[in-house]
Image (cartoon, rainbow, N blue to C red; front, top):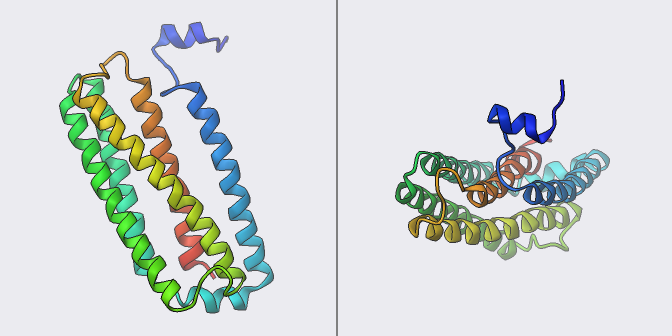
Amino acid sequence: MSTSPEVFARSGLRLPGDLAMWFFILVELSVFAIFILAFAVTQWLSPELFAQSRAALDSSMGLALTLSLLTSGLFAALAVEQVRVSRPLRAAGLLLAALLTSCVYVVLKLNEYGHLAEAGLGMEHNTFFTLYWLLTGFHFLHVLLGMVILGWMADRCRRGAYTAHEHAGLESGVLYWHMVDMVWVLLFPLVYVLN
């Protein structure tokens, strides 16, 4: 059976978002995979150092960070569904809720960074914290970009720019946000929990 684009179009199946976003996400996930692999291999080589250093982190903070991003991702997914049923104003509200819950992540993460810096646990402290700051900092930058995208999409929904039939841009933005969520779901146990 052929899997040409015409077959997908006739069946109503299509890849959500834009193909360019899928390629961008693939590249970003590849970079994160290299960081995660470096962290895992270094932990395997220095398990005692990583266990001692991890004890300085608060796993309940990591859990709160995870819940804030997952909640934000849920609101973003619900926004796409609202646009698909021609309710762009509800979608705008849901995207604003996603933005607000992502603000919780930012406040908590900045608070954690501040406490670690005050305790002298900066990038130069040891290998664990070098990798911690690089990995979580790189992710943090992705969160900030995602928040800009969420705000921009909320404004476009409010202005009626997305319709039930034309919303690939919205899907692409939400796909990016889900990538940010998914990476954090991998980082949380790796950085905060697993010894």
